[in-house]
Length: 181
Image 1 (cartoon, rainbow, N blue to C red):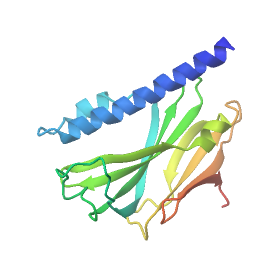
Image 2: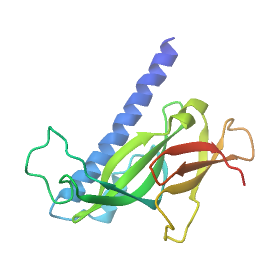
Image 3: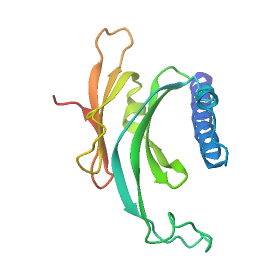
């Protein structure tokens, strides 16, 4: 029982570290002085295994009652917001992998993390991510959405990984399943 509680505590700490990393990146991106690439690369957590980006998303900003009238043109109700997707894999305290889907918003000051959510289906599998690849490496998305292949092992002793596909459709709905090709 204590072992399970310790793993859960380490998982929460790893997730907190990941959030801190992205908040630090946002703070650097919002400062007037651009951060040096070397400093950014050195600030990345050693638990980050890989990141892949691609596809695109668009949405219209909605009014939120708690927001004040000092909104930027990018976040004002009715403003068109757009950006791209990024998936980030990280090593948990128990050495299995976790996967996060993020939307990166393109703003006047540069890209910013818009939102992030864990792909819980992978976490429930207790798998080990060995590689991630975008479905399309041309850099030109044919339509909104995102697709990537995730190579993972359920048992680290197995030689060949299994291939799963992460797919985000034009509405932003996510699916994660064994690849069919």
